[in-house]
Length: 118
Image 1 (cartoon, rainbow, N blue to C red):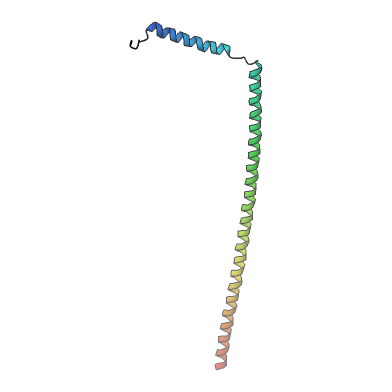
Image 2: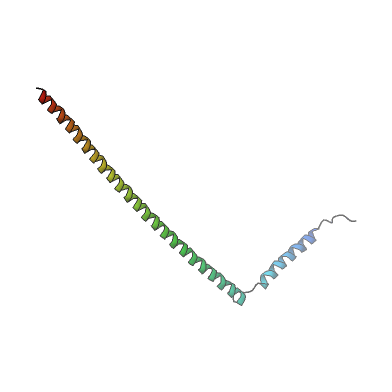
C-alpha cells in the first residue's frame, strides 16, 4: 500500500484551472432573462410579493382598528372614572353639609338649654 501523494504545483494549477472552467461553464448554461422559465419564476415571485403586501396591509388595518377600539375603551374608562370622582365629590359635599347641619342643630339646642336655665 502506497502512502499519500502530495499534490505538486502542476496538479494544483490544473485543479484551479478546472475549477475556473466549471464555474464558467455553469455561468454559460444559466438561462437568460428572456427564457420562459425565468419569466415564469419572476411572475410567480411578483404574485407572491403582491399577496404578501395585501396580507400586510390587511394586518396593519386590523392593528389600526384594534388600536382605535382600545383608545375608545380607554376614553370610556377615563370618562367613567371622572364621573365616579364627581359623584364621590358630591357625596362628600352632601355628607359635610349634613354633618354641619347636625352640628349646628346641636349648638342651637345647647344654646336653647342655656337660655331656659336663666
